[in-house]
Length: 477
Image (tube, rainbow, N blue to C red; front, side, top):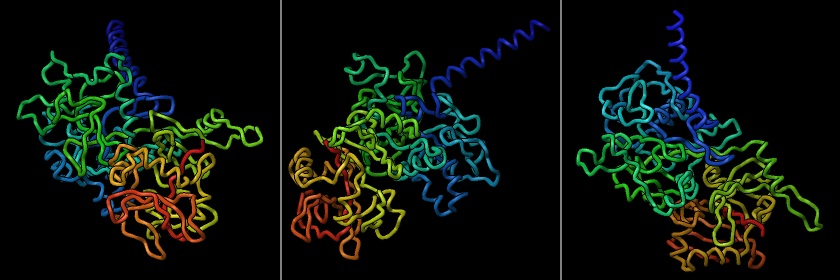
């Protein structure tokens, strides 16, 4: 009896030790690994189960039609996955998505087929193995909405989930590499001693191309994550730019600097979210690390610091708690999103008077109001500062236009977001413009125009001050 008890105790110990090591590696947020003190990233790409739990949540709280917008493109997802999604059940499945903590809901616990994917999966589902595949067939907007939903449901006002910027993704991907490995440019993750398992790229076999055989997951990289190189390419915060290679490419194409361009949902395209801690503790630390002196030489603690990761960063507006991406272009530091601050005075509008548009586009301001809305430490750019930006991006109207767009390399990410002229709003596809603080007489002011009617960008002085333009703030020197 004593011998049996010892065997049971030893078995339990062997079972507990791996779990303890696993939880240490995945750090404080479920399913994530640590990048730095304030930043975490998903261990794998978002899987089918997590996406279906998102669908179920939207279905329950927002209704059928809203949930339909969550579904992937049937032409850009594995046929077996799509067949599983379509085969809903009246029984509620409470198995939870690993990145959401929410039940997958009205989807079967078992599925036909899918067994062929089980072997290479890092976390094969105890129900249907298809649930552990990365979700594909979704748009950039759907991925952004998923991260925002996680912030709402799981963030608890302390964590913001979003897509990683390209430089953030690269820094994460290279974490743990030696200098020799970094300079090599790429690394073959295939485990040659084991057939298929651990592979992350195209095997050259025709029956593998276009399928997830042997590419759905592979063993942990040095940064304690999975599927960083290969598997499916991962969207970044810049629309149209994906990183990491994918199962249709060969190993030497799946390296930290490789870029995959997309314009629509693809079978080889997925994503993972990055998590930024946004607690009072961090805000206090930001302030203490960013003490500046005012004109009288006294300390001024009103500035919030930028958390940098390469040339990209994260800034929190202390006035309303909104977080903004930040990018360094040349010697200038720009907020890389349209300002969405709601002032207590002045004239401003949501695009087409719909407040739901503010989260994506920010507010449109008159020139007088625009001069007052940038947070402390930032200001509305002068005409000359826009001209410096323009020259940093090539100095040619058509070249700067491409660089300013989300698909460009500048990181400025100017959305085609329309304007307010008089009492009317221009169409989204007609481009956008941003106020400069420089004026041209009593009625007009300068601004940066991006793609209004023509595919070019320019700094011009033809904007009536009572028009509604967007605001991009630039950091004080």
